[in-house]
Length: 309
Image 1 (tube, rainbow, N blue to C red):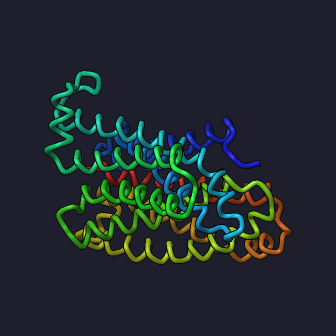
Image 2: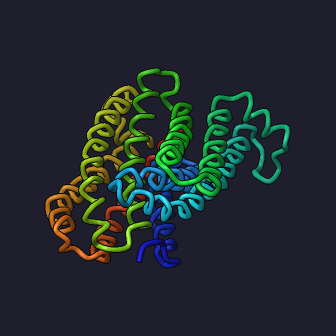
Image 3: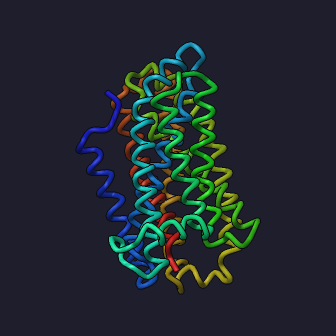
């Protein structure tokens, strides 16, 4: 087992699409569907890329090289998807900024946007990071140094885009959003990587406990950074229901709370069974997929927040 099936890919796309529509409805008329869809697609690809780059570090020394080789192929594919979706997202944002159609934007206009705007330059960092990770996955020999390089490149590419968002003018707010996004990306991305790379219960028994410890740190950081960012962004709690941005944020909070409850339930029941080899690879994968479905909703709502006026 391991790896996505066409049906699984379609279901994941359907979850993202439904979440895009929900975000549009919550923030209407201040949320562009195309902007949310392209942002969510790029974010999901970036999250999976970061997770696949990170997952070999959770394996024991004896099996780390094997997991690194198994993750290399999916990592190259995920980075390539990230590259394409990031280029599409960047082009769409440039067209919207210039007030022209996506297919009518000229090379000069796109170049000016990428070079002379903060959003454009941060997008270029994402494009460069995706390209570099793809090159590392395909061309570089496997090893700890390669893994660390891929993780660093993916993290830089993700963080760069968040620093050009709503809180870019606030050093504290911008940092909080970047830290929040990276913590969420590691949590969600590594779980996706487990589904894509682990094929038998012995692997889940070794890696899942380490992922569980990592996820605790990620959750603590993302909650603290998320609260700090929201406190800086919102002038009043009434904005959570009075504005489109606030309603999308409130929905994201609800989804995150439900996800935390599910994750804690899995930690108390699934983790002991997996550690004792009592949970099959199929059961572990199915439990992961339920969490990942909720994570996809949260990531899409986060993407919607980034483009909601």
